[in-house]
Length: 146
Image (cartoon, rainbow, N blue to C red):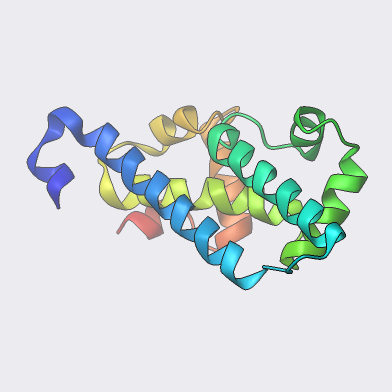
């Protein structure tokens, strides 16, 4: 509502709301998956925390497990296994979820075109964005924005 009243700061407001949502998800994640004083659990939680911090910063541009593994000095297989063990979900699900949350928010709260959103989320083309979106939601971006 506030972003509609003040177009000057619309982008910053939306980004702040999204970042707050990511932080809320991380807080819930920490509560649910707290493993206690087990050394392996602490390492896994620390690794997953670092992964989610990287994801929050880079999901728009980097969508490969390889990127996140390289930044954490791990193999993609090790990172994938560790994240799935801690969260119960594959790492690509988390990467795709971050992109989809942002895409849905932009579709619902802005007047940006599908092309503009695809560019903002670093897709190679609007059709690649539409295919990705439809594959993961079962709907086209236009149906979400209505």
